[in-house]
Length: 296
Image 1 (cartoon, rainbow, N blue to C red):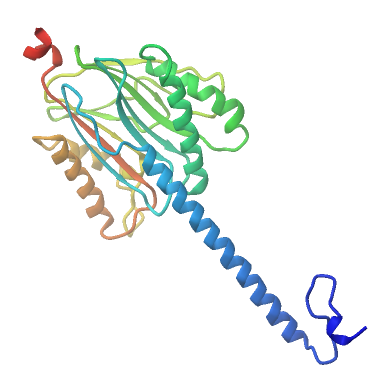
Image 2 (cartoon, one colour; image 1 turned 90 degrees about the horizontal axis):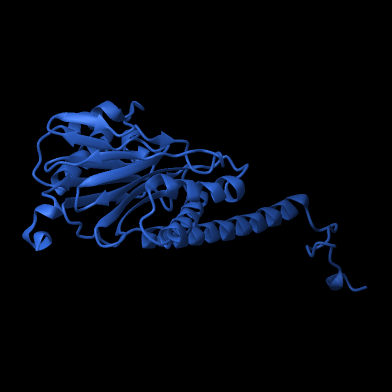
């Protein structure tokens, strides 16, 4: 057989007297580097695609909700993640207010977020408004028994149902950081109706809490990327710092949101965020039943 036709089993040139081990090693390293570069490019492409999907399922802009002044902040830490928020109508006078966070960060968290969004849409398609606790139970069951079983993954969530006629908020929580109700200078943590995060236990029960909102009340929902933000000394921003910021008098939801986000960034002092950050603020205005249009 001519020498030019000889090849090894894996396709590489055979070792001959003129081929040194260093040449073979160098060729192998180049090949491995090419494969690693290709793999990195594929991961970057998947990451960019999932980030696009994540941003697509978030509201492009907040709706106009009777009786509420709304503002939101969302910032991804570095590529796709698991933060989610939404405000949407359910019937003529009810509005769903949702915030959720998938455990961890990156491609897996973003993929799970898309799944949770699909399950939530399936629940929403049912006739009439679904009570928050019932909605969480319906989403939890397939996550715990099928999609997240034995993965160690879970999702925290807060679901509120706002009645614009009575200004009553019915809510339920699945292991999510408790939203804050700020009334005057008092900060109250809405932790009276909290169960396990979604995807952990099929039989977990969720229950509803109710809150009659008053004009001037401030409702602040957030993910743990806000309170667990750290500075150069690795100190947490924490719940107490957050509560202190929220007591300052403000005239709008945007003002309170800006004050909160600026406080977290100032605390970090230029250090990049370790996790996605989401904060949704609602300032309560006069009720729908008090407006002339509704009384007619």
